[in-house]
Length: 320
Image 1 (cartoon, rainbow, N blue to C red):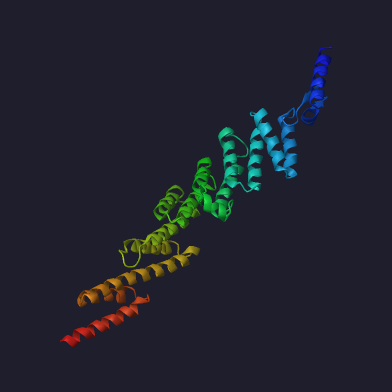
Image 2 (cartoon, rainbow, N blue to C red; image 1 turned 135 degrees about the vertical axis):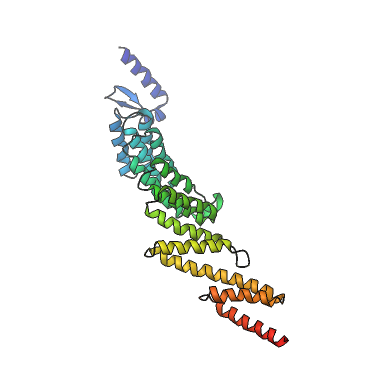
């Protein structure tokens, strides 16, 4: 009798406002009540997950997200909750929202630290870092508006934090340095490469980091007309790399860098010699030209320096 009375009242409400009511509420015999499908949830988290994944498989990501969020809201402690959160991350990746996906995966680590998905999460976060490092996730127009930095460093640092001894930690640390190097933050990049060597000395990335330290110094080296101490340091670091890893694939590139830097050093000496020559300080000029001839024989400046020495000697002889 009491249920019949409630039913009559509810029918009366529906009759007064039929259109929105009938479109929002349905009668379910299983629960013996009227429910709004928009807010309803399945009786068990397992059923809710299966229901949500049906939409995911059909690539109806909007509906899948709604159903996955319902599961997390109504069954926050269920074993299916971190799985639902994982699929929310996958959906964001599918939609090209990589940084949001990274954040979504991180929620699982923070809220469900013992999730079976932990290894998958670290891997996906690492891959997201790679995509953003390569410029994925935003077009050039968006980059112009909001800037090119997409917290790549944050993502790789989180990969290390989530699995400091995992298979991807050393690579993540190395890529922080590589990313900063690409931003022309050479000293900061150098620091990160050194951290790769110190924290993961037995990894292959430590070898690559030694090479990149030298490259960072090479790129920090000043123009030929200025002091070349950084250039000298870079040359020595590259020589050490070639000596330590003669068969490494990077050794050929290292040798090419050495040749380029020695060209710069020779040019620096040539400019100094020219300065003294213009000041008619011929003896000092000859010393610097002589250094080029003796120590930089394989550079393009050696023959020029030798020619200059001959010119100076001729000038000195003509005055006697």
